[in-house]
Image 1: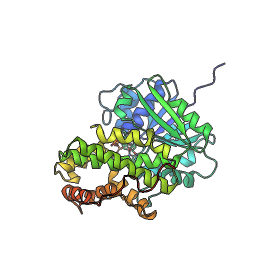
Image 2: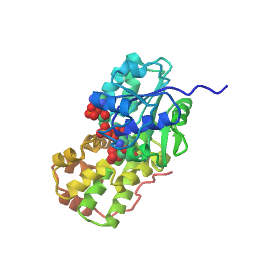
Image 3: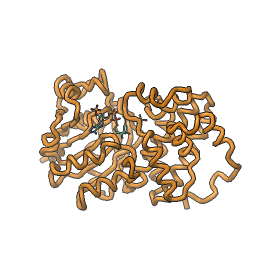
Image 4: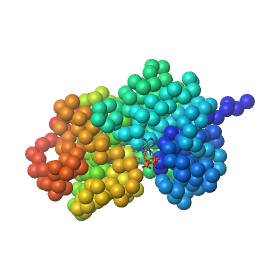
Length: 341
Ligand SMILES: NC(=O)C1=CN([C@@H]2O[C@H](COP(=O)(O)OP(=O)(O)OC[C@H]3O[C@@H](n4cnc5c(N)ncnc54)[C@H](OP(=O)(O)O)[C@@H]3O)[C@@H](O)[C@H]2O)C=CC1
Ligand SMILES: O=C(CO)COP(=O)(O)O
C-alpha cells in the first residue's frame, strides 16, 4: 500500500507562500494556506486566485485557504512558514500552541530577526524548543515563475537529515528540483545577503554603469558572502550553490526581484519611500542590510558593498557617493586570505 501523502500547512499568503502552497497542492498533498487578509483568503479558497499577489495565475482547486490558524494547523504533518522576516517570530509564537506534536517546521522566509539580527533558526529553536525538526527552504525562485509551473531548483537545509528529506520530497516534482543540505547557517546567510547585494547591482544598473560593473559587483558580492560565512562557521559549498551564488545571480539580474527593483529606482534618483511604495510588496533588504552589517561588525569583517547599500538605504550616502567610495578603495589581492582551504 502506498504511504499517505503528508498534509501541509503553509503560513503566509503573500506571493511566495501562495506559490509554494500551490506547488505542494499540485503534488497531491492535502494543503491549507493560512493568511491574515480575509478578502485574499476568500479569493484563494473560492475562485482559486490570489488577486493581490499573483493576479491572473490559476491556483489548484484542491488548495484550501483559511484565516483561522488553528484550523490551518489541524492535522498538519509539516508546517511551512512563509511570512516576511519582520513577522517571523510573531508567527512562530502564534503557531506553537497549535502545532501537532509530530509536525516539523520549515520556513522559506529570507532575512534575520529585525532588531536583534538573530538567524531565523535561532529564533525558531528558542520559540519551539528542543526536539522540533527545523529546516530552511531557500534558493533562486521567483514566486511568479513557480506559480506558473516554470522549472526551478532550490535547496532545503536542516540539522535533521530525515526532516530535510521530508520537506524536499513534498516540494520536489516534475518541474521543481529540491536538493538537501545540512548547513542552516550558510543557507540563511546566503538568502539574506543576496537581497542586499541585489540592491547594489540594481543601483549600478539604475545609474547605467554598464555590464562590467554589474559582473564586478556580483562577484565581489559573492566574496563578501563567503567571507562573512567563513567567519560565522557556514560551509563555503553552501554559498557556492543554490542558496548563495544561484540566488545572487537570479536576484541581481532578474527584474522580477523587488530588491533589485528598489536598487534600480534609487540609482535613477527616486526616493526610497516612493520606490518601496511603488513595489508594494516585501523588500527584505531594507532591514537585512542593517542586520548583515551587525553580523559583520560582530565578527570584524569589512563588507564595502553591503555597508554602501546600508548607507544608501539610510540616506546617509547618495548612490553616486557610494560608487565613489567603492572605486576609491585601495588596490589589493583578489583573495588576501584563503577562503576554500
Ligand atoms: N516572492 C518571492 O519570489 C520569494 C520570497 N521569498 C521570501 O518569502 C518571504 C515572504 O515574502 P513574499 O511572500 O514574497 O512577500 P509578499 O510581499 O508577496 O507578501 C507578504 C505576505 O506576508 C503577510 N504578512 C505581512 N506581515 C504579516 C504578519 N505580521 N503576520 C502575518 N502575515 C503577514 C502579508 O499579508 P497582508 O497582505 O495582509 O499584508 C502578505 O500575505 C520573504 O522573506 C521573502 O524574502 C523567498 C523566495 C522567493
Ligand atoms: O528571493 C527571491 C528569489 O529567490 C525573491 O527576490 P526579491 O525578494 O528580491 O523579489
